[in-house]
Amino acid sequence: PQDIPLDVVYEDSDVIVVNKPKGLVVHPAPGHPDGTLVNALLHHCGDSLSGIGGELRPGIVHRIDRDTSGLLIAAKNDAAHQKLSAQLQDHTLARIYRCIVIGNLREDSGTVDAPIGRHPADRKKMAVVAGGRSAVTHWSVLERFPGYTYVECRLETGRTHQIRVHMAHIGHPILGDTVYGAKKPVPGLQGQCLHAVGLRFLHPRTGELVELWCDLPEAFQTQLRKLENRG
Image (cartoon, rainbow, N blue to C red):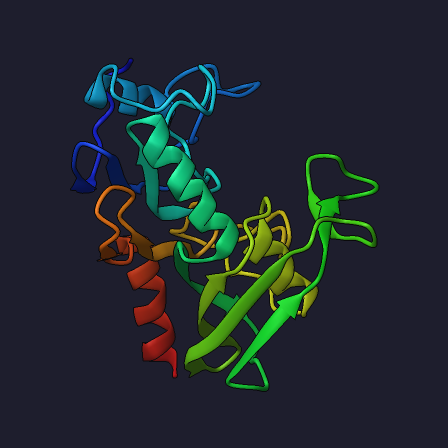
């Protein structure tokens, strides 16, 4: 447990939903032994986190990249964890993201259905590869700017770096993504312009629909204002 501030959006005896800041790693991994969201959750929740993820990932139902911000749900007991994991599988747990991509998408909406696996030449990256795991991303245009598009994405699957890989695959990498897009960082932006803005799920105990939204981070809003002013 570590006393790391948490932006708690929703909490009860079964689940906790936090708005993860950019730069925070979700769970301990090589190179990040502590200072993670899991360390913060252990401090906040005490012993009330599910054990299904093991001692390194207690309560963690799904992940968000370190340099992506937004809503993430964690389970406080094993029963809740199992039900939320089942909702991930049958898509009743909906994850909605907003992003700014480079270039202008021709259509107003579409679906990227392309398998994702480890990059054959760079093991730290993911890529669309034959024989990869099934990956489906639905996207729709929210606003168009000269040279950029503001997009909403809905995940049907949850592969590592899925939205980043899929948008780059169709020729529209996410603004600020130096791994899958332009190598040069964007001034005033740490990481990519990608934010998990919404979550919808059935409460694991009551079965009631829970729908949660959060604001875009300030740096993301600043980029949008710049594009609006340029347009």
